[in-house]
Amino acid sequence: MPIKHVRIDERLIHGQVTVRWTREVGADMLLVANDEVAADEMQKMLLPLSAPSGVKTEIMTLNEAADSLKGGEAARKRTFLIVKRPADIIRLLDAGVEIGELNVGNMSHREGSKQVKRSVSVSPEDVEAFRELDRRGVKMTGRMMPEESRRSFMEYLRKVYG
Image (cartoon, rainbow, N blue to C red; front, top):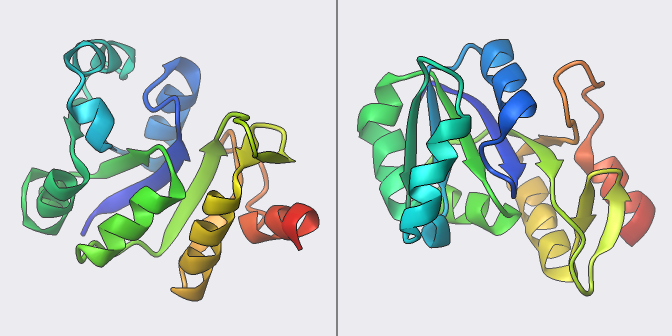
């Protein structure tokens, strides 16, 4: 599968960060995989407006995204996959999508979450999902922008959650 980059970013598609990452990884397709967003007609209309010019944008449920990544259009493109939560990645893995590395970019503070990096706050449920991803051998970095160091996201997590 030609997944060029996988990012957890609850803002999904947004200006400078998406433009920079898309260019950096050479993606020609942005694929947002999220069940709630795929059911929201307003977001489906607005999110592609923030995508870089000339980059195909698709918003799909997690099941649709898995199918597309395993043999549909996303499997034939240089795809930049964006999800909101680490549990989304687990669902994609369980559906047979191969993900060897992901970047944790932005998860805002919510009740019960703790900040582990400037732009990332995680809940106990997120911690368990990240630990499961780590057990499954998924490499994780915590980078907002491409020029940041490729430091392991698990290092950030361990400093706060042990």
